[in-house]
Image 1 (tube, rainbow, N blue to C red):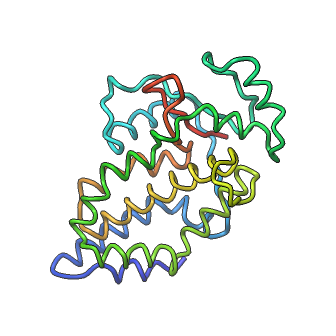
Image 2: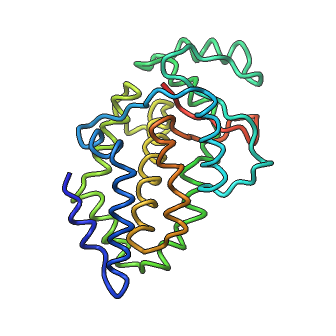
Length: 238
């Protein structure tokens, strides 16, 4: 991939420092961005303990959640049968299994998470104003334009998520498969956007905050809190 358009965003007196941060961030994203450019997004195999530790670290350092407010993360597996959570009735579970989605268990995955308390929502609330105030409105627009049009990040993530979940985009935003697809898309896009954005802005602390989140993207995808279980986050895994 050609990352020169990102390097050109580094301007002003601190341009050299910003370039160094961007280059280091791109090295960390190297296992993710080239596969996405090919329309692929897959999780690397990791043991459950390492995954759990990485999730908790990302939730505290990146999302800013207090450790005492985090319960054991719940893995939502793409390859293993969905386990009915305690709050879900047998009837609701049965209806989900009979869903007509291309991959029926996607509906069950979607029904198990609280999309109003999502990973990308947390990132937006914590970082958006800071990134805008640091870069400025126009440079932030230039960053978003570069990600979308020069790097085709949005298109690549969309293709990768569609293949990962086995769904196609739908105009019906209330359709469970589409809602889950959007949640997964936003989790990937905003993690990468803020990681690169703060590098362009020369904000070293925030760049460091996203290091674990980038590593987590290779292991599992933080979606949202689990319904009926505050503090327990649903994470999409292989």
